[in-house]
Amino acid sequence: MGKVIAVANQKGGVGKTTSAVNLAASLAATEHPTLLLDFDPQANGTSGTGIEPRTVTTSAYEVLIGEATAEEAAIPTGMPFLDLIPSHINLVGAEIEMIDVAERERALKNALAQARRRYDFIVIDCPPSLGLLTLNALTAADSVLIPVQAEYFALEGLGQLLNTIKIVRQHLNPDLEIEGVLLTMYDTRLRLATQVAEEVRRYFGDKVFRTIVQRNVRLAEAPSFGKPVLLYDAASLGTRNYMSLAREVLANNQRYLHTPPEAPGGPLPLVRAAAAASPPATPPDAPLPMPTMPAPLESIAMAPRPLTTSDNPPPGTLPSRSNAAPMHSAYAVPEAYAAHAGAPRRADEGDGGWNGHVFPSSPDAS
Image 1 (cartoon, one colour):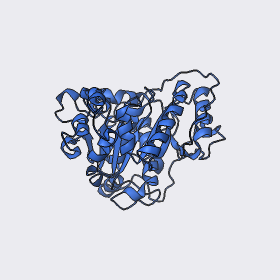
Image 2: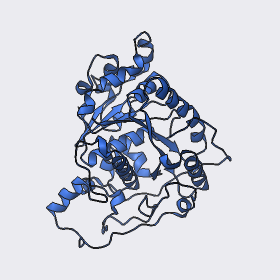
Image 3: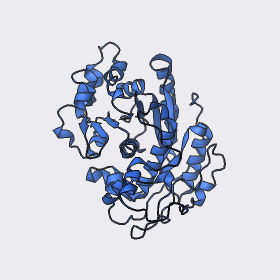
Image 4: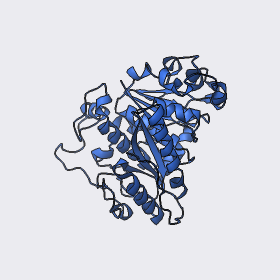
C-alpha cells in the first residue's frame, strides 16, 4: 500500500502547488512510482506538468463523483515513474453537486483505494480553502504536508488549519498525521525569514523539515514551461531543495515503499545507473564538497532538529556547470536529469516585513 500525502494550507500563495509538483517529481526521480493528484480547480498543478487543462477529458472531478476510477483518470507525464490525475474547473461545483451524497467526505478515499496498490506515493495538491475538497483530501490522506511561507501572514491561518486537522482526526480519519511543516520562499538576506523560521520551529518542534525551500528564479520560471524544476534546470537551487525534501520523506516512510530501502547516504537509483555507464569524475574515496550554511540559518538556536552543513546551500556557493564537482548526497540530483539544465541561475529575489507576530495557541500538532 502506497502512502497518500496531502499538501494543504488554506492560505494562498505559500507554495502548495509548487511543493506538490516538485515533491512528486523528485520522488519519481528516485524511481518510486508516484501519482500527482491535482485537486485544485485552478489546475495549476496540471499545467505545471505540461498538460493543458482544457484538453482533459477525464479529471479529478469525474473521479470524485464516481464517474471514473483513479486508474482511468491517471495519465502519464513527460517524466518516468510520474503519473497525473488532472484537475478541471468543474471541481468548483463539486461541493454543491455532492451536498446530498451520503458520506461525501469519504468519496476521494474510496476512489483511491485501488490506486494505492499501484503507487508508492500519491501526492494531493489541495485547493487554498477548507471546504469539501480539502476535507476529502485530508480524509483520504495518511499525512498532511503543510507549506509555510517565511512571511508574517502565512502564520496567521495555521491555527485554523490545525483545528480542521483535529476535527478530521476525531470524526473521519483518526490515523491522519502531520508529515511535516515545510518552510518555503526563504530569503537568506532577510531577518524576517529567520524570525518566521524560529516561530514555526518553536511551535511545531521536530515536525519541521530540515529542508528549507529558498527563493529561486528557476523555481518560479519552471511552471511557465510546463515542467517541474527538476526537468527545467537540474542544477538549480530549487531542484536541490526539493530533492533534499524527497530524501527526508523517503527516510520517514520506508514502510510504505514497494522497493527495498536505500542505504543511508547511498546514491539514488538513477545515479547508480549513470555511474555504471561512465567512469566517475573523481576517485570513489575522494571527499565530497561540504557547502556552508548561510549565517541566518545557523542562528536558529531553538530548532529541535538543527540544520547542518548537508542541508540547502546558499545562493552563490554551488559549483558552476562547466567544472561541477560531485554534489553532496543530501541533495544530489540524478545525473539522468542533468541534460535538462538550463541557462546559468540568476540571483534570487525576495522581500517582506516583520510585525512581531506570536503564533496563536491552537490544537496539538503532534
